[in-house]
Amino acid sequence: MGFKSKLRSIVEDNTTTKGKIFDYTIDVLIILSIIAFSIETFPDNSEETKELLYRFDILCFFVFSIEYVLRIYVAKKKSKYLFSFYGIIDFLAIAPFFLSSFLDLRFLRAFRILKIFRSLQLKKFNLAIKRIEIASKLIKEELTLFFIVIFILIFTVSSGIYYFENEAQPETFKSVFHSMWWAVVTLATVGYGDVVPITLGGRIFTIIVLILGLLIVTVPAGLSATSLIKAREIQEEEERKKSKNKLE
Image 1 (cartoon, rainbow, N blue to C red):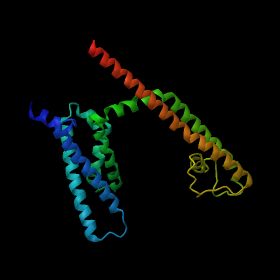
Image 2 (cartoon, helix red, strand yellow; image 1 turned 120 degrees about the horizontal axis):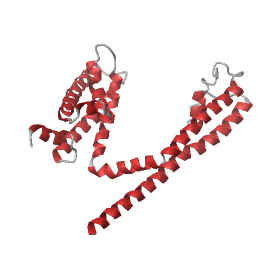
Image 3 (cartoon, rainbow, N blue to C red; image 1 turned 135 degrees about the vertical axis):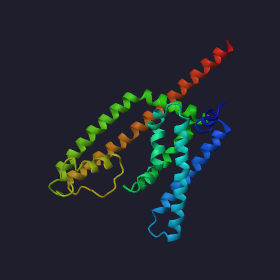
Image 4 (cartoon, helix red, strand yellow; image 1 turned 30 degrees about the vertical axis):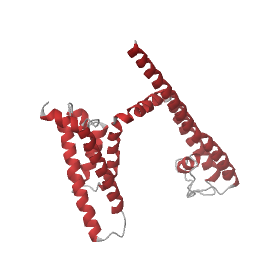
């Protein structure tokens, strides 16, 4: 096995011992960098803390840059990796440093957390990931219809609350589009309370929308649960067939 192949077995294959160590090391650094990024947002950090966080961020940048270069080097199809989900996330993890002279992209460091998804490729997660893929395919049409219905409902509810509240609150409900924020948070049963109806008709309409929202929230949960159960049954059936074929 050549040097490049050995390196690939460490960088890309997280089922090997060295590959797991490499991945876990990167994952720990990702988590620490996210914690550091969050601490950095405190308004009363001392100069010493700011300096320490800055130095740690440089360390993260250095390690993630090496990881990025290594992944490009060992990739069989470099362009495929560069434009893949993981390739883009790996680039975003180091982009703030490369572009700091032109743009303030420090917020992109939050995307580093997405790098942890690579660890989910570990063998023990393979069945779970496959199950989610099967479940997604099983309810693809239902979910598409659900989101179409949601869009129609948002527009209808926005129009309704605009009709009831525009005259009473012209600054808040300026148009149907301005009313969409209220429609979304009400249908989602979040109800931030920043925008509330004050007319009798608007309040009655809100009660109806809230009840409708409670019903809507349960739909995707029910679809997901049913599809995951079905996906597990499909997997178990496939495993039984494989076991039967081996015995024969």
